[in-house]
Image (tube, rainbow, N blue to C red):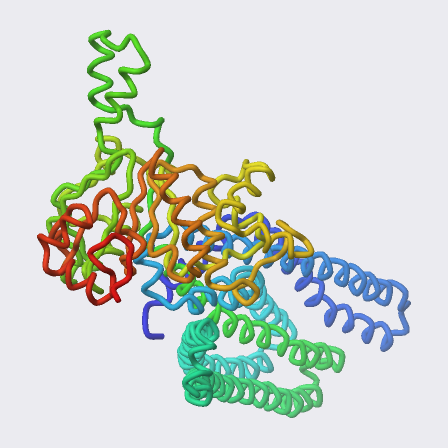
Length: 604
C-alpha cells in the first residue's frame, strides 16, 4: 500500500471501538460456527468407519444432525448481531460527520463543494458498514478456520497436508501482490465519486444558468468525466480481484487433483484409510470457504479504510467553540457602578447602556486564508444601539467581509470586535448570534415548511406572532393562497426570489434582535413591496440597530449614517447629503445609479 497499514487500520478501528463488546460476541459466535463446521468432516469419517465395521450409525448420524442445526442457529444469531452492529456504526459515523459539518467554521466548509461533503455522509458511510463490523470478525474467523482446517488435515495425513499448504501459499502470495493495487483503485474510484457529487450538486443548483447558456452537454461531459474515471478505476479493481480469485480457485482445484493422486497412492500403499482420504477431501473442498472469506473481507477492508479516511477528514475541519457562556456579559461600566452602589434607578441603567455601542470594530484587519491578501484593513466602526447604518462601496470593497466578521463567520487577524463593550473572544459564538439577525442577499430556503423557516431563530414563537411578521412583509396573501398555510413545504422552485427575501426578513424580525443585518434585502422586490419593507426597517431602527449593505443606494439614502468602503478600508462616513458634497466616490456611485442629490428622487 501507499502508506503503512497500521495507522490506516487504527482509523477504521476508531469507528468500531465503541462497539468492541458486540464485536467480541460476534467473533465468539463466528468461531463457534466455524468449530462446528470443522467438526463435520471428522464426524463424516466416523460414519464411513462405522459402515466398514458394521457398527451402529445412530450416534455419528445424530451428531451430524446436531452439528447442522446448532451451526445454523449460531450463524443466524451472528448475522443478526453483526448486521445490526453495521447499521449502528453507520449511524454513529453519520451523526459524527453531520455534527462536525454544522459546527465547522464557514470558511472551512465552503472550501469544498457541497456535493462532495454530502458523499461523506452517504456513500462513504455505506462502505464503512461492512469493513468496521463484519470484515474485522470475518478476517479473524477466516484465519482461525484456515489454520484449524490445516491442523485437522495434518492430523489425518501430513503428506497430503504438505501438498495443500503449497497450494495455499501460492494463493496467499497472489493476494499479497494484488491487494495493494485493489485498495488504491477502490480509493481513487471513491474520490472521483465525491468529485462527481460536488459538480453535480453545483450544476443542479445553477440549472437555470446552465440551460440559458445552452451548456447542458458541456456540463454533462464534465460530470461524466468523473463518473467515467470512477468506473475505470473500479474496473481496474475488478480485474485485479478477478485475477486473484482465478488464482485462488485454480490453486485449490490443483490441490484437489494432487490430493486425489497422492491420496490414491497412499491408500493403495495402506498408509491411509479411504475414510481418511474422503475426510481430507472434504476439508480441502471446505478450504475455499475461509479463503473466500479472507479475500472478500480484505477487499471490503480496503474499501472501508479508504472510506474511513475520507470520513475522518471531517475531523480536521476547524470547529466553532460550542460551549455556552456563563451568561450575558455585563458592561464593565455597569459593573463598576454596582460596586459603588450608585445604581439606584432603572433609568440610570438604561441611559448608561445606551451610551455604550452595541457593536464596535477597532482597527480590524481580516483575510480568508493565511496567505491571502487582507479583505479588510484597519476598519474602525461604531454601531449605536438604535438607528440605521448603511455600508456602501464598489464590488470587492469588503462589505460582505464586514458582515462575516460581525457574524463571527470569520475571525480577525488584527484588531478586535466588541459586543456591549466586551471583546468578542469573551462571548460564545451562539451568544453573539443570539443578539443578531441576518438576511442574506441570496436568501436560500431552509428544507422544511414555511413555519420551519420562520421558527429557525425563535422556535417558541406563536402562530399569531408568525402571522404578524408575515403581514409586516406583505406575505399574508401568499400564505392564504397555500393549501397547507404555514405548514406548506417550501422549495426554491415554488417561491420567488422576492418571496424568499421577505420570508428571511420576517424570520429576522420575529427574532427581535439587537442588531438586524441586511445584505441588500430588497434587491428582488417590486416598488410597492419595497416601500413596505423599508417601513419595517425604519420601524426597527427606532428600537434597535439596523446595518444594511446596499448595492442599490435607493435603499439607504435616508440612513442615519452611511459608511463608504473602498479596497477594504473605510473611506468616508456621514449622511447622504454630506457625502454627496464631501466624497467623490460616493457621488460617483450615486450618479451611476441615477439617484439625485435630492433624497430618493430619480435623476431625470
